[in-house]
Image (cartoon, rainbow, N blue to C red; front, side):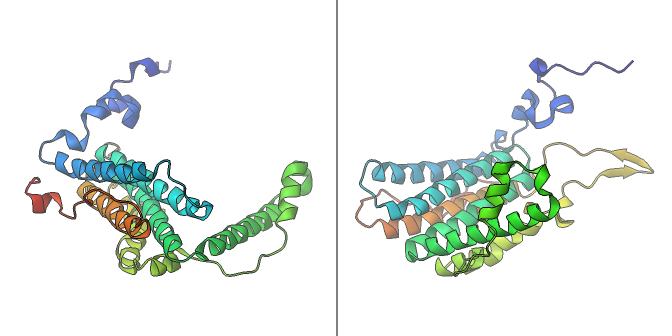
Length: 265
């Protein structure tokens, strides 16, 4: 007879429920006084950005500003999500989310610098819809699709024209090519995509021919996730404040790391 599975109401041990368990909360990286400074660094940056957004709150903002502000809020959310995942030992997953944060940052700042970026983004989106529609029509005969879906596919049957924009081009406009080359591109192989390099935290412990699972929190490079999330928010704030010069903001996000502050060991 198969053994009875633990019930969800008893979410206690990591062995049973993994990162969804109560035990996982007690295993967080920031639980150590030696490492909590890294998470505090991101928390302080988030608080600083929230204060900036509150200053804009309720002010008349042109409709053309909304896409950039929306992407800036996505950047803010992605950096927080990456920090939360890294703190729980889910570093490869944090890497994927952090890369999204940097990509949103590039497009946010590019929009603040050049208004035609939005049209190029729309062209890119339309082009991707065309490619998706083409693939779906190839893989699915009409009788396997609902009339609504088929109509949608037909509406994207013509390949769009017009200038598009890539993440690199957005970074170039935003004067962030160094961040693209050193962070965004690197995060692609480290955790965003299914690469062999992304498996460095998952190498099983092999004893003879036995498999020993290594599932559990892994904090290798967690401090780098916090540092990069902090840097992402700091760069974004600089561009945010340079764009909204009509507002008066408080002190900016500090560029000092925990090591420079002497709060990390």
